[in-house]
Each structure stands twice: as C-alpha cells, then as structure tokens.
Amino acid sequence: MLRQEVNELLTQTGPDAAMGKMFRQYWIPALLAEELPEDDCPPVRVKLLSERLIAFRDSDGKYGLMDEFCAHRGVSLWFGRNEEGGLRCPYHGWKYDTNGQCIEVPSEPADSGFCEKIKLQAYPLVKIGDILWTYMGPKESQPPYPEFEFATVPSEQTFSSKRFQECNWLQAMEGGIDSSHVSFLHSGSLNTDPLFKGARGNQYNIADKMPFFEVVKHEGGLYVGARRNAEDGKYYWRITPWVMPCFTMVPPRGDHPIHGHFWIPIDDESCWAWSFDYHPTRALSDVEMEALEAGKGVHCEYVPGTYIPKANKTNDYLIDRQAQKEGRTYSGVEGIAIQDSSLQESMGPIVDRTKENLVSTDNGVIMARQMLRKAVTALRDKGVTPPGVDPAHHRTRSVSVVLPPEQAFEDVCKQDLEAAPGKPHTSV
Image (tube, rainbow, N blue to C red; front, side, top):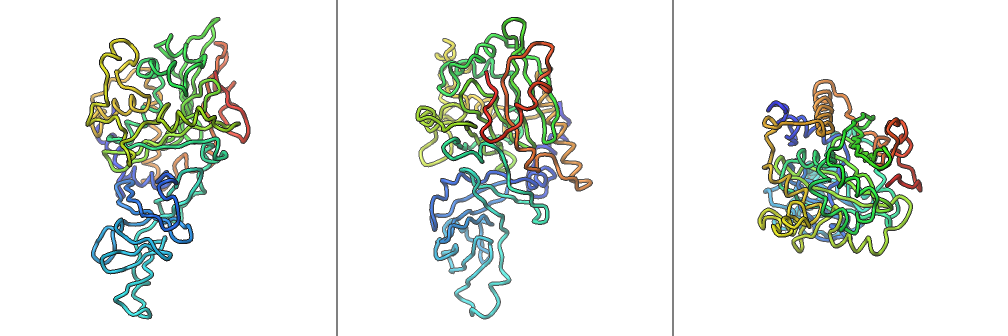
C-alpha cells in the first residue's frame, strides 16, 4: 500500500504539482489528427494536465495549441473565427496566430506596438503518425520528437483512437501493466474478438490463472514479464514494456496487430485513454480495419459525435448479467476497453491506495510506482531528466513467447524487445 502523501504525489498533475511538472518533460498525445482535418477548420477545446487550451489549424496548415481564453476579456476562443492565418475572438476581434501571439487588435492603431505585448501561453503541436503531439514544458528542455513504432510505421499499418475515462491517470495506467487480470476479466473476449481470436497463446491465458511475475528494469521503464504454464514443461511468457510515465504495449497474439496505450491526464479525476494497433511488417487488413473502426479489441464504440464511450457509467456500461452468468463475458460488460474502464472508474476518481492489499502478481505495479516516485523527486529536488524522455527509450516492443524453464526472458528476448523497421514481431 502507499502512504497518502505518496499517492497524492503520483496522482496530482496540475501545473504546480511535482508529477505535473514531470509530465511536462515529455511529448504527449493531445489530439487525433482527424480532429483538425483541414486548414481553417473549427477550433477544438483541449484540456491537458488541468490546463484549458484551444487547438486550431491555420490557413497554411500550421497547428496551434494555446490558452483557451482571449487576453482581453477572457472569452473562450472556441467561439473564434478561424480565418486568414489566425484565430479571431468574436467579441472584439482580437486575433492570434498559432504561437499565441496577438497579431491584430482592431480598436488600436496598427503602429502602436500594442499587439506585440499580448501573447497567450502556447505549446508546440506536431503531427506524428495519426496523432497531434504537444510538449508543455520549458522550451529549453524540449526533447526530440517521440519515436514510438506505432506512430512511425506507414499509415496503412497503424490505427489509433482515444476515449474519455472518468478516473485518475495512474489507476488506469496500472491496469495496463497488470497481465494477471486478462485470465479473468478478458477471458470471454480472447476467443471471440476478431483482433484476438485464434492465437495459440489464448489457451495459456485461460488455463493458467496463477501467473508468476518477473519484472526487469530498462532505461526507459520496465519490462513486466508474466509467466504461465505451457505444454511439455515449458513456459508461456507475455512481456509488457512500460515506458515512463504512461506508455504500455500489450503482448501480441499470433499475427494479430500489436496494441497498447497512453493514459494522459485531463485533470486529476479524468484522463484520455489512448489506444493503438499496428503491424510492423504489413498493412492492416480490411477485416482488421473494419473491426478497429467498429470499436473491437482495445478500442470502443462512442456516443455519436464524441469520444465518450457508448457504454459508460451513466448506463452501467450496458452490463448484461445473463451473459455474465452464462460465461459469455466474465464481468457482464462487453469489449476489452470497456471491461477495463468500467472497473478502473469503479474505484472512484482517485483510488485510496492506503487501503490496498497487494500480492506477488502486483510486482509490476509496485515497481512502476517506485520508479515514478524516484523520478518525480529527482526532477523536483535535483533537476534530473526522467526516464522515457529520450526517443531511444521509445523503440521497444512487447513479446509473447514459449521458452524452456531454464531460459530467462530478459536474455533470450533481448533482440525481440527492440523495435526496428520491417522486423517481424515475436508472438505466439
């Protein structure tokens, strides 16, 4: 269990919080590129790390992310006119460029120099893959762009989505490195979801509900190895990389795409659960794309016109008690994404970790908390750059493999855990 002060240290991500300042050391997903589809399209409200922002795309295709509110009277620029290279406040016509610089105040003489004095807080916004990424930290500390493999493969090989989740980022992320729950919560989906079924590894997940965990540190975070029994005295290993602070990859199943997540704080009581699927060596098939767009796998269906899951706490996640009773779904909730979010949200906005009773299968969670705490305090007290900022830490993969008992996954799978263009993934 965690002391309350440590729980607060790890869960609070506002501008003045220590964890908030650490998150601001990284490039983080801000928007799907589809949210700003063309030049001069409508602006989009964005809330990240408890900051209310506005994103827009100007007449030249440049992306901007800045304070939501006009510097004049505090009007939300979501109502703004996106025109002729800038976003104009509809109240009195003040206009801003993608850097947050005021470029026109109609009531003031053009040569007065007044505009030069007015600048909104702004952050860079860049398109990598199908995601718009931002960096919200000090300019002098801005790292190179992220190099996660799912965002750098050709566009036909990757798919990304996001969903709104009503809980703190940390309890959502901890679910991503907890492989033991797969044998229970997701057991009904392994052989029915089109993005999972047919893989030999599914039988090991279902048959062995007492995995042994071995957790190994790497430069950017952890490799969380979950070992289950396979045939002939061998072991089935599922190795989940965690890259600080909030990136995880789910071990693959057969030739299905690899998938994974980011959990990005909106504020301390809600987050964006980002999900991706990609294949390192081929285009996603028509069948796979149809399933992904329908919300299968780690994705979900939405309330139309939003990124809010169709199954959410207002409708009890559309739980089907008969399906639960018959074993078609273990919890009665349909879909892997909503199975996860329903239970993570059920803990409350910020779970009270002082009441936990952890066991050996929680070793990945325990070590991740320790690494986060050490990194946060090192940045706060000594200015030490945290792990996971360096793009070299991003070039990792998840692995599923069957090994003899005498072989350690950290030795045998070292090359398999490294991402490289055109290299097949290691999967069972």
